[in-house]
Amino acid sequence: METSERARLDTYFGNIARRFTPQALPSSLLVTHLLPERPSFVRAVGTVSNLRAVLPKPKSIDAAARREIEQGFPCDELTRELFADPDTAVTYLETRAASEHVVLLDVGGYFAPVIDALCDRFSGTVLGVVEDTENGHKRYAERDKLPCPVVSVARSPLKDPEDFLVGQSVVFSTEALLRGRGDILHGRPALVIGFGKLGSSIARLLHAKGVHVTVYDIDPVRRAQALSQGFGVARDRDRAISAAGLVLCATGALALKGEDFPNLRNGAYVATVTSSEDELELDGLPDGYTRSSSGENVTRYSTTGHYFYLLNNGNAVNFLHGASVGPFIYLVQAEILAGVRLLARRDLSATMHEVPGEDRAAIAATWLNYYNR
Image (cartoon, rainbow, N blue to C red; front, side):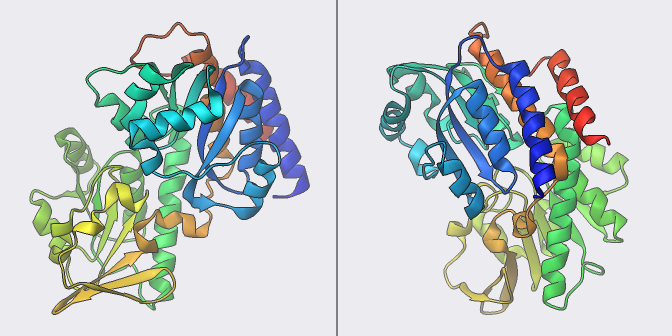
């Protein structure tokens, strides 16, 4: 990032932080993709809260960004296991923010499995969670009862530009890997599993490239939406998997189980928009499959009479090329800061919430002032 661009970004976040700084600063833990531009956002989180730890998502850590962050904040290793066991999770929170009022800033529902224990047994107070992603939103929303408020920005209109551009980056990276092997998208029918914001964006972009796209989603409403937009909609999921030459997984949950992989047609490519642990049950792959490299960031899985290719080891394929969505990501990051102030007021019920429309409007107006030049 050029010096002038970084200065503009720092000024933008300084303006946003001043607007959304709570009267009494809570403490916070921040899960984030630690990409090159991310230090400005992290420092803004440190302005609106007492940032006790940054937990970078393992598959998206820029070394220079991490070194910059470590100069001002603790950086800890993030794993699903850290927040799978209640005792381990509570102990960790105690080491970072004992007896403090804490906001948990989440990307993908990492805190969801232990949120009850954190709320019940932590020596301080968990004021709530701010969740950034659709799969994380679902992890909290599917619970019968929440022990604290959860402010979700996953379905915010400010996230629409990001979702479209992430879909564009997924298609770009997928095509780049295929071309790296001397292959192309055209003539290879695609199956998009999941027709949410990302899946629908991917489907439209593939169609624009002349690819025949079929969609599958467990939600009949989304299947009807896909049909209305001119996509083929799979009536039989297994048959659709076996017919596709490219399978793009965009559910935020489990798209392919272990028993699905042998149904892939020979030479099919599989790519995801999130981590392999969310989308793919690779541990359930039947015995007999062996792995081998088949080009940069392409893994060939094969057994007698069958083979398929997995892109980027099943992790988000767009992170291979930076996953950049330009300055539009700063809209959502600003909304996360607004979520911190919302939770710091301590007047929300223990349910799912959104950032108020007037706060979104203020964020958009500020962003336009800096990035509509």
